[in-house]
Image (cartoon, rainbow, N blue to C red; front, top):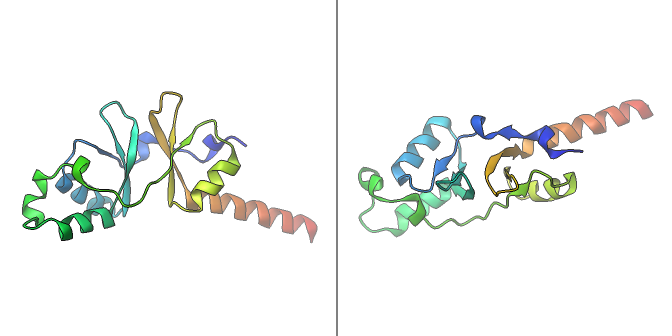
Length: 140
């Protein structure tokens, strides 16, 4: 099966640029109620995933940093504590499932390592659940 079946395209994904500020990321994540978002470089390549935990640890570990001056902190300067692995659009379903077991979403890249979207773990689980239910129904 082609993993593109599960793809949520980049146009529908909330991302942040590596050149954005901590404040921009905080506000975007709050507005959309996300706990993690992909980070892209200026060429649209996937750089990593920024999480609420990364932002909280940065606040805790930076003396004098409060919400008012988060606009002075670049996302590039925020240490990321989780490495979300990206998969290539030509990856097989086995690679996708094994990666999704440890991540809420899996970033997808093309041949030029450009970010093209994400695959949500919930979409994979729903698909597999329906397949299992159909199989059980046939066997009954």
